[in-house]
Length: 300
Image 1 (cartoon, rainbow, N blue to C red):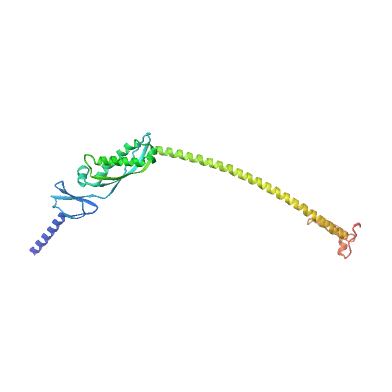
Image 2: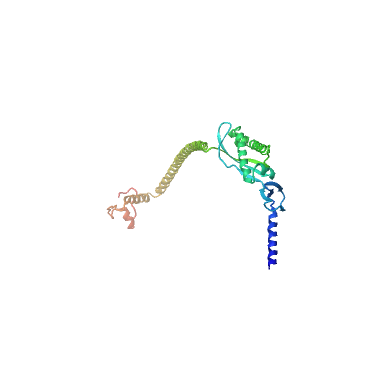
């Protein structure tokens, strides 16, 4: 039983010893082997590797991927015409020489990002001081970013190389400081209001002109229609008079009777109108009794 325990303990010890001497380097990392605090080896290829057990040797890892550093402060910079602007930027960089990086920068990516942020900001400040706002926005934007990249590379590749490679430097935003921005926005708003008021005034004037022209055309159309209507009405009255005259000329007695009917119709225009007639002497009632109407020249 003691022998089985001894064998099991030995196997367990071997496993622990093997786990402390073997390590795996990921394809996204550098493996840095330290021997008593000094860099012993740098593993750049992924795979399984071995080392001496601690405390004789230790291993740490550094990211070998392309990293992004964004600007972390909004401190304004002065342009060539002494305008205070805020610039947002980002840098794409990677660790290329782990040994130099650890000796001259730090043990992790955060140390390099912190120092690189300071160098990039100083380079931007120097270049912005030489440029106007117009050049920052359009004319020299690409040249400025190229100049900043060159200055940063010159710094990280100096007498004490950082072991990093700066791939790209880009400006994402150029803006005035908040106080100036508010003033610019107010001027823009005032200008837009002025243009809007001018357009509204022009539109109102055009609207009045259109309405006046429409009213004039309406009056002309109504006058022409009234004139044509009166002309047609006059022609119709003349034709009616001619027809009446022609018809009444053929039978004067009937014409006299028809006019009497029109007179009676006009006399009983209201519901309460009353007329007292003698049926014996009224030509109207004689017709209803079967008699004939008097001649045109007879008296009622």
